[in-house]
Length: 552
Image 1 (cartoon, rainbow, N blue to C red):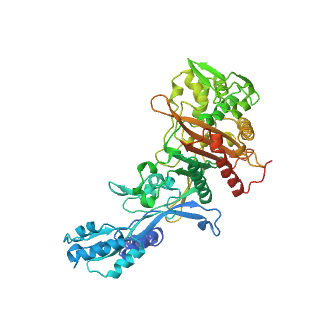
Image 2: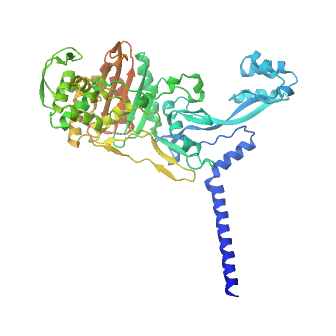
Image 3: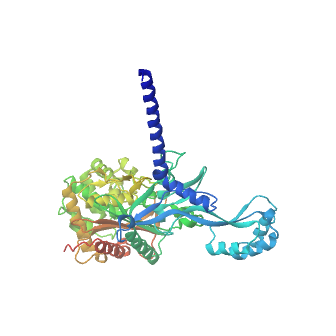
């Protein structure tokens, strides 16, 4: 064989190898990587489904479930086939009789059906979507020519309103279906399969950090406390202070994403990340941490409380209007003294105080993986006005979000590390590869020693001041806040408050941080009275859930 013949053989052989490789790879993609997509498509074609929705699932954690790891996940958003009834008016023998029969089965207006079915149109009309299986069976049994049942795939939320503010829903956009609010919106590209190649969708599954059991418990407790005090709304967050992961996030009023059109748009807003409020006295531990960390005070530093101080012509007084004499910094927190917080801020100084506020994450987005997060508002601290710093020291004149406040408390609890909060544990791609969220330290606002001192002080706050929040055998730390609501005119609404309680346990080695917020409760003045029992119930549940041994 000549040299040129040998070269031709090699070229042909090389082409065969390349072609075989391409075919093999294509078969792999079809049979393995794209298996789910084609399986769902085939099912749709075989069952007369009028549209095909390919979208990834959303799961929460269920550590108490038995079985393999895959079974320790609870499905909260998926795709489901729903029956619809359609008719072609031109082919109906008796439109009026058909309308009368359908009106009874579907429980919809008879006149509307008669108008639609009597139009004589040759185009098929959808008469009702997402009808029940019983309704579908009844319509099928009528055996009316020109009318029938088809199936379409739509988004389905098996747990109804459970975690709905976090999940969001699948709605409609200018170009078709679109995730709106919550995870459905934030991870719309991943769930819809548009993240990589719009012509070849590969939807991902999203696994949340939320623990189903904890979420169910706090949703129940939130509903109970809001009902008891006839409040306008409220929320609860449970966070792991060591990592920043969100274990539960409840919010009321809520909605059912299966029927979102029946709820007002305001019900879709997740106030934990999308609304801000003045925290009131729950901000005082942040001020005290700044004082201790900067070396200006210790837990035992004393202060002579006059009851009222005057700053730039404005009187600052304690919530009880009393002067408490000589008190320690620990007692400033125990008695929740505004004058004591102002004393600490003055020692720290405006520039340093602002730096601590920023390093604790206030006035900026936390970066939590949920849409629509707002930054809070600490603009008053850039004015240079002394009175603004004084009022900020006890949580007035600044605004925070619940996710900011609980994340800052996690830094108080965990040794001084401000962790980036996150609610997605991992994203699972088709084919099995995973993107796992790793804990991230954003800043270190205070030292470990300062954290330890603040933890001890906050245990004293609960021991001395909040008997309804104490749990026998455990060192529980926490602080309440009762804040007025701004009227938008530079003042505050009369007799209308927001209550909040933030705390953690066991204080010596915190396993969780809890934030409870309640809007406009009626018949109760202070958060120490309204929220302490709920905080205790949630903390006791978590201590038992995690089998935490007594610390006292």
